[in-house]
Image (cartoon, rainbow, N blue to C red):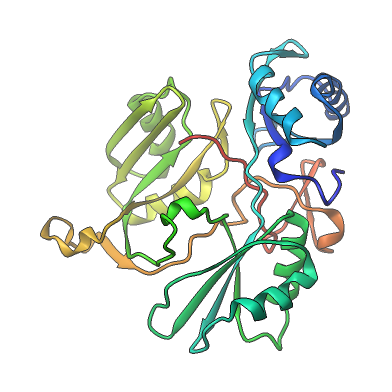
Length: 322
């Protein structure tokens, strides 16, 4: 098991491993292979729902990790050409308060008891609701904070596990913008560059009648798509079933299609299918791939014998380009 205090910036996600090799042998092979770029704190091999293996490689030093990310893609492990991406380790929580504004100094003093805090982001209040993002330096500290606050009956805050918030997302000004969700349409990110409209239709027609598919290629490493269904229920099923799954050696990001800059104010979007809402971004832990530190939860459910899944557990999220 990887140590709790690993540097999130020194972690690599490795895909396209040989599924005919045992987990133990894969773990050894991946460790030996990546150890050539620098000392490792550990390797964890997991499997997706189709029993295809992938791994997390935790380096001790960030510079070694960066070198491996440049040189390791396309190298061979057990006869397979591997794919590598930086692992984006979710380590943030969102606190929501009704009527009571947050005080940054108070939060710093109260929440730092769980571990070192990297950033506290106060968002613009929405009516009587106040929001703040707290990003920890290390994932396990964020998990401790989340569990302690989530299940504390004396706590006056709503607590949610959330994706990391980057300053660049808001241009240095943290505001809570209105977003419009089209509940008949889904966004699919991190697609393989060879993905076609026909491929998507074949895969997603299982969830309902498809009205339209549209694949967008910004560049070979940034391919994403939109699918519009005839029924709202089909879009929801697709999100629940496919978000976090591996397809063509890529981990899919699937959620509702969003419209920014308040397009709902314009007549083109004023229909019953697109609804303006205020929401805190989050990842559904029931559908994303992750692994948990064993001691953080006592009611983990074994999946595939190599990793743990729990409906209350925050996800270990692996990210690539859309």
